[in-house]
Image (cartoon, rainbow, N blue to C red; front, side):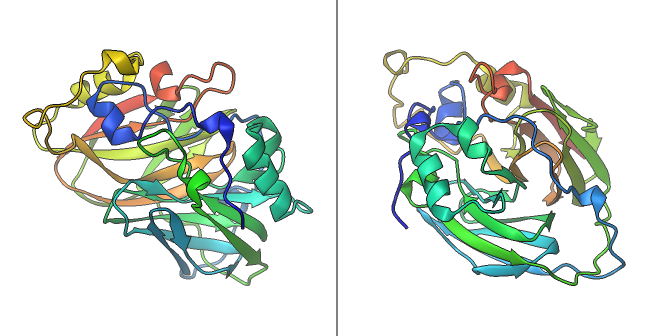
Length: 311
């Protein structure tokens, strides 16, 4: 597979953590989305059962994962063995779309045309050196698994080779709908149903894109003592020009204000992920970095960021 560089993506801000510490705007991709119909998790009514697991190993900049899987509910686990944040977005190609057409769509930078080739089913996201999982219903078909998070230069990881193909064949899964203790709906531009306080422990949240655009939910665990208001202020600050950003001194550098605990990668309208995470007491922020379909402004800058407390 040849490496591609989607030109539309090269103007994105730098990676999330570095950009946040400079109080600049953040972004993970330049996909623009209209409504795409999906068979969502609620459309399936399997009997009780267990979930097969598909493990995606991530490094800079490649995925190691099986080339085939069966349809049905699947636990998608991202094992991030690299030094940067990554996500694994499962993009199902429309029937008849070839891998060559996909690569041409990525290289063209015309992401309206790219999304006409398929739909995103979301997927897991994890910080460097950690694992995270979501449960998603995978329909049969051909998928491209990609990471759209940009590097320090604003180049998305997919353009550096972070893409893998997956064939999902018809399966005989009898797994029941996952049991969720929270329901979050992604809309323009909010996280409907997000609780203000969550008990410490293991959780499964049903996260559904109920909007009309591509959305994601990045779940950030803040460092001890870092207030959520300060992080949100950094995320929503107007973009600064490179000349206006002072170089960080060694004294000013320090640990990042957050880590990416879990979340649902960008998903098309109608898609559902069951996001699994274990929360320790502290402050947390959820955010969507996807650019707006009309203005190109990251959804976070339009208000799609919120916080909750784990007690």
